[in-house]
Every structure is written in C-alpha cells, then in structure tokens.
Length: 224
Image 1: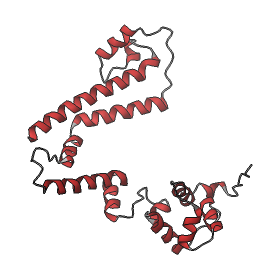
Image 2: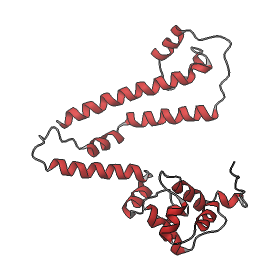
Image 3: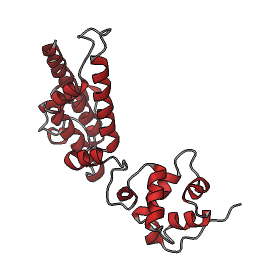
Image 4: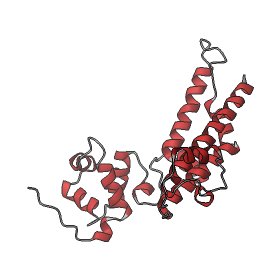
C-alpha cells in the first residue's frame, strides 16, 4: 500500500500556481518526468512546485508555460485564459468568453472563409454561422432563456422549498404547465407541490427555447 504524502503547507498547496500545475500534470499522457526533462530539472523539483513547497524561478516558469502552451499569467492565477494568444486574451477581457469558446468562433470564421471561396458549394449551402450567432445573441428570447436558467440555478442552490402535505396529481401538473407564466410561481398559485417546482421551471425553459428556435428559423428564412 502506497504512503499518502503529507502536505506541509495546506494554504500554499491551494495557491493558483501549484493548483494549475497539478491540473496540467493530470492531463492524459502527462508525467512529472516529461516536464522535468523539458525544463532540465529533477522530478523532485516538479513535486515540490505542484505541492506548493517551493516555486520555480522566472526561467522555469516560462519553460512550463511553453511546454503546456499556456500563458505565465494563467499559471500564476492572474488570468483565467490559458491561451498565450494575445488576441484571444484581449477578446476575453472585452467579452468574458472562455478561450475555448473564442477559439471555436475563430475556427468557424476561418472555415466559412475557405468554403465561401469554393465554387463547388452553391450559395445557399454557405451559411455564415457567425452572422447567425450574432442575430441569436441580439434576440430577446435568448436572454429570456439565460435569465430562466440563472433563476433555476439560484433556486437549486439557495432556496429550500417547503414540502407540501398534498400530492400533485398529473392533471394539476399539466394544468400548471399549460398556464405557464414567467412571473407566477406555482407555489403561490398552489397548483403544484414544492418538489415539482423544478420540473415546472425546466418546462418553462423548454418553452422559451422552442420560441427561440422558431424566431431564429424566421431570421434564417429572411437571409435566403
């Protein structure tokens, strides 16, 4: 049975750098030995860095960032964007989008530019996804859904709903869903019991999503 390593400084263990180094080392195929060989240090140094016992010097920090293709600011916890790409970092600062989301948008733009120059594709096949996404973000239905999801998360984490003494029948639940109103909680209308509140809220989000899809399809038709 292997021994459990004792952490000498719990606070340092959870500092941004050792925490993020451990996350990078946990990637499939990564080992302390590989990183140590790349930086030209011994494995003990890597172990001490990831435990927060010691910290790398500036040269070693740059090597770690190079090895994992991340920014030094990300390693030190100064940024939540792992990418060293300054353009991606600037977009994140302006929009709050994650680096992965930004990279997907950039790939989509590049793919669209390539396909649009290919004469084999008729014009109706070439759909500018970014233009469609821009329209989606500007639609009020999109923000209705985001607000509903946010409310549902708050309910799950913050609200302790009282248990009802009576059971909700399928007919009562269906009635509650048929008269779905954003501003009317089922507990206030006494249509359904507390445990069905989240089912009711999810139904409302689905309804809002369906409205969003219908509106978006109309906008697509307008582009034809």
